[in-house]
Length: 246
Image 1 (cartoon, rainbow, N blue to C red):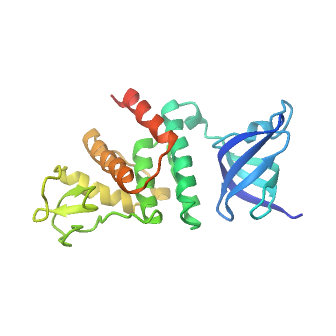
Image 2 (image 1 turned 60 degrees about the vertical axis):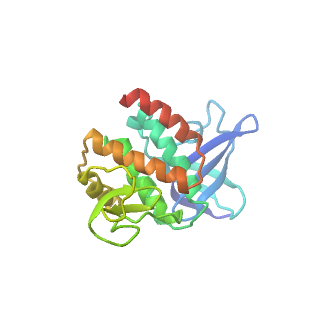
Image 3 (image 1 turned 90 degrees about the vertical axis):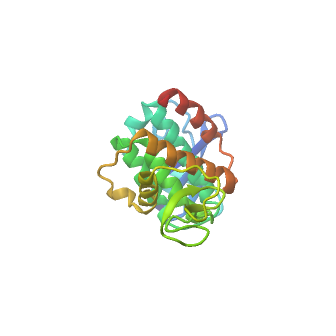
């Protein structure tokens, strides 16, 4: 059987027998692949240190479509040491892995891999995990089929935007505004910018706490209302965020 070598990220892992593991490896070429890592739980196995969640590298396996593939070896590209030693960062990274897994159930678009890969690399480089997560969440809304209107008023199409509304599905102008909370004009501008930005080209990004909070609150409310996703990592993220930020 031909051995495939592809770049991938381990989305999750679980035990398989006393000595092996089952992995879900996210790849650009094949999407999420179920892989058996035989003997990976043995102390002397070369696979032991490279088969944990968030491992990012070149995976060699005997690929079998719609069946479990057998892992041969992994060449690590980036160990994500900065993420793994920081509970706040690894919590966000874990959420992004779980969110991506759910998004991939709705689409097979190959750029999803690029989005996740670049987001994790930016968090590893030291960029704010909250902002990077918000950017990725905004981009994923397209693939979930629930894209908000972030160009003009979601009700009448006016470009004179006053605020953003979860219930109305995006920006709202003064004429269409009812009881929605008014957010800062800067937040409106930044929200659209984050939706459009190329993650791989981010070299500097810094937002004040009020803007970050307004953007994060809108995205959380939007996902809660329209996405229908119930992620364990998101629940934990909310609890740890209160400890680190407050």
